[in-house]
Length: 271
Image (tube, rainbow, N blue to C red):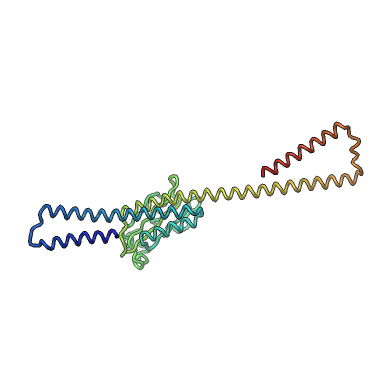
């Protein structure tokens, strides 16, 4: 049973109890019981919110662990956050290399502030905030209530931000919700770092493969050149006349040829 339903049930029981004693003043014991019940109902709501946050974190970890691609990771996290809070909008912005942004930060001052300061920006009533007066009409039309921007940082540098907007008629964004999104931002930073390492490794492997192919072509070209050169030289000079060489020289040449062939074979095994 949801936390809100549990809380309502507890309060109905209290109302029924109170209705049966309307002609009597509330005793200290009854007042204490009412206060305890209210605290219990509030605690139930808090525990339910924590449970939902933990489940969302588990789902996010499962999603990001199955992919090492930037787009898949960002889409999965944005989708899970949207499902967890029923948001008007959930977006993840990443800074480009050199600190540039893919969006116009002048249009999103709250995003600009979060990216520059590395601190979470929370605007409880977006339509009345002075910094957003240039988009007040749009916010009113979409019935936007609050805006939360949580920076995604890596080694003290903001590399992006999670941008959240809630409906005016939807649930309010609590401090616990903000802390939850901060945890998700930390997970996002680590997942993006892992994806970046994977892409760099894949790129290096590709570059290594291309380098080996170039070396192989160079070796083939060199051997082809030597074969053609020796063939042309032999045709021009006639017989090689190897019999004129001393026996020791011929044996040394054979040994060097054997060593060279062994080296070439070992190189081929190493690839």
